[in-house]
Every structure is written in C-alpha cells, then in structure tokens.
Image 1: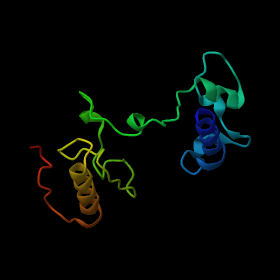
Image 2: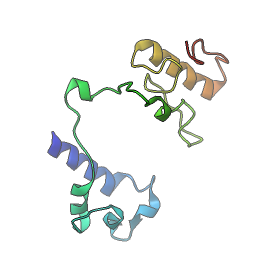
Image 3: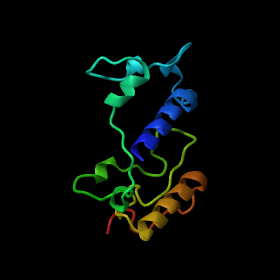
Length: 127
C-alpha cells in the first residue's frame, strides 16, 4: 500500500495539480527542485525525502481529537477559498470530536456558509 500511495501522489503532482499550483510547474513539468531534499536527489527522486504514508489501519484512517489540536480545525467556510465550503466531523464545530453529532454540525455550518441557514447552530459556541 505504501508503494501504491507513493505512485498515486506522484501522479497527482506530475499530472493533476497544475491548475491548483500553476507556479510550481515550468515547461518540463512539476518543479521537484522546490521540494526540500537533504540528500540532494534530483527530479522525482526528491519525493522520497517528503513525508507521506498510506493510512490503512482503522486507527490511522480517522481524525483524532488530541490535546491542543482544536486550534487547527477549520470552520466550513474557513478554507481561504471563496468557492470552497467543507463539511465533516473534523471541523471546528464547538463539539470538536469525531462523532455523528459533530458531523451534523459540520454539515449545518456548510449549509449556513452556502445559504445563510441556519443562523444559529446549537452547541457551536461550546457546551
């Protein structure tokens, strides 16, 4: 799975991310020289020095609510992109825990970001 994750990530970098990161590409493709690699490798080999992994165990496939991590959670409209709204139990909802209730709150936040409804989400200011 690790090899498959690496191939998938390399494919994205080389073939799919240019619309998102246009300045990271030149006439030869993705600028791997922009990646940090203490070994001094060149080209796609620089990807080996990056942190990446395949999360395949159930405990690795879920966002945890660890101490002091709430500050890193986004709100539905907090991506920094005007046209991107996100939803899920991993958002900063006021409940800030992995559960169906936080997922519903994240969905309500997304609805509010898109349509203005609901104006108030019970529990969003904490319990």
